[in-house]
Image 1 (cartoon, helix red, strand yellow):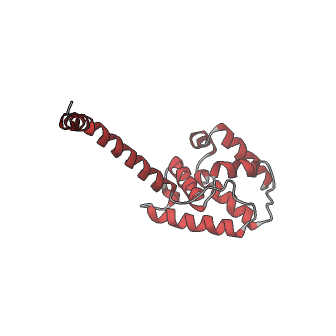
Image 2 (cartoon, rainbow, N blue to C red):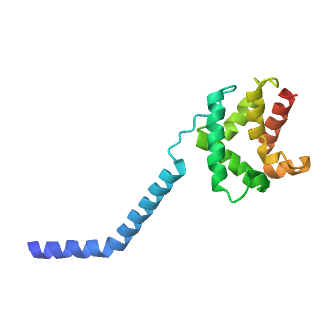
Image 3 (tube, rainbow, N blue to C red):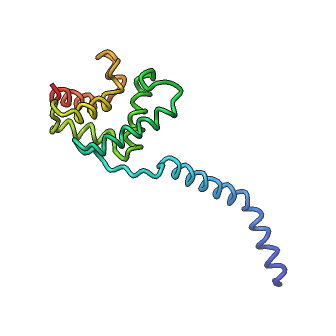
Length: 155
């Protein structure tokens, strides 16, 4: 086989697999772009530090940012959408909603501390204007147990 024949065979192979390579590169680019956009550059730290003014300010800034993206007030959203909104607020501030809920359920809340009230109010936003019988539509059983434990601490 001559050099020209080898080059011709290689070019035929590349051109035959080009659609597949192009498709794989496109999929990879889309996945990387989605991953970069979805992370938003915010690293999630875990639970919101209890009593931290700085943490509440970060949550407030994230709340305002997420609110601007909505077509209406967060209070007018359906319960599941409000829950998704609150999760985005926590993530945007660098915290995890679920970890915060479970951490606070284990104790440490003081109903005399305004920062604690503010944090609990944000955690409970998904169900604040709903009837008790609608809670299973919004929360998992584990989340409902955590909410009950938090309510008991805040009495």
